[in-house]
Image (cartoon, helix red, strand yellow):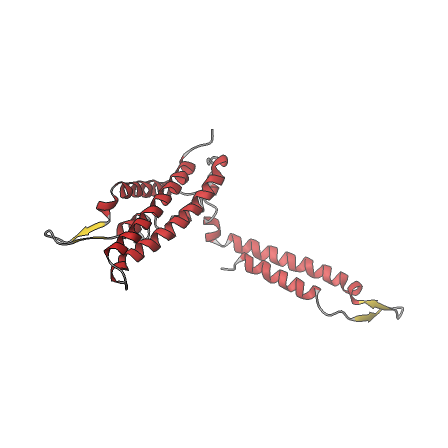
Length: 221
């Protein structure tokens, strides 16, 4: 597949290279010395026309033949919106039952330990079957929804940025907590420390997702 940006960049680079070529002195029919700038104007104009036409034709062809480009301009499906709803409910449940969900006990009354894996799972970071797995791709489609409230778009974009930040931070804190007990100077206190940090980030993610969900499910008045 030919990338449109590559085509346009190539045309622009070629144009610049031609425009900034070293000047030469030429002689006209009356044996007068003239600048190469004047002599090259006509040919340069022809070059721009040819280069622009070629880029436009190639860009149009590449766009038509590029299914990802077409898919990128489609709104989210009902199933994708449902993924956001289910993911939001999962995060709410996790926060309401944080200690229970982040505690794993061995069978038959064995030792219990804190485990942040539930946090990563709720955020869509553990499996491709998680509702929020790569949910950012769905967020990117929201701007193409015909019935979206345009007054809420700014809030939506800010919320997606907040979501991305919280998701990355919660993933880091949860991951660190899983190994904090075994690191030099670590222990159960270190596990709890990073687990608490992960909880804070999940709360921020829940808040951002609430705004996102409001934007994609409410119609303009």
